[in-house]
Image 1 (cartoon, rainbow, N blue to C red):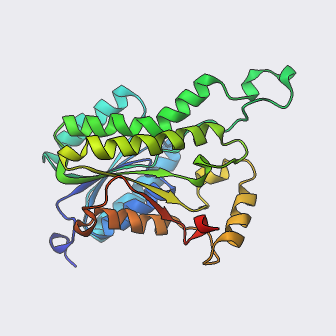
Image 2 (cartoon, rainbow, N blue to C red; image 1 turned 180 degrees about the horizontal axis):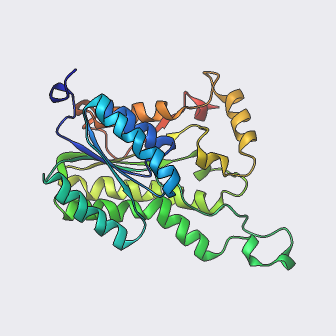
Length: 272
């Protein structure tokens, strides 16, 4: 299929955290349907070289544009630099169909260290919680408002965040992320209401346990994977492509009436 005949050939996605996991899977899925992608990530020079080569192959195969940005998406300078470069490169107002927030940066420490004499660096500080909450929750609002103020969103654009079951139950070392995800769920409700007047639809995806680089950072992640396999009615854990499929579905015209929803993408794992 030639690019001009593809579903999203005139649209762009901005993906925060697109070098691996759900964000990377979304790059591939959306590009396959003709959507152009601006990918933001933080990688070393070596890993970025490989990543850029992969993006070039995708561009050539799928006849889309993929713009890589190795910037800090969590500070004002990085955000403003991206907007300036993206606007100059694309030169097309009202072209952003999707803002996908897939940033996975935070602190995985207990609330209280097992041995108080070892020092506070082994337990969560308030600063750790604040950083994690901004990285994995409230930064989505900064990005949404920045893109909106730059006049880049399409009339029927979508904002999608990612939460997890850990927002509502205990996982070892997950406290700061749990606080962030719970905050994100509340924030999404307010964004869905207050940004709707601009035509924006804001939704959350709660993926099942998925073997991503960020999951592997969680203490006892192997145990989470084994429990998920036993729990899941369909007998396997969630794959990044499963989530990317739903991100694509939420971008379609048929999904234009979905707003303020938390959508489980887990094969029914949350039912048990």
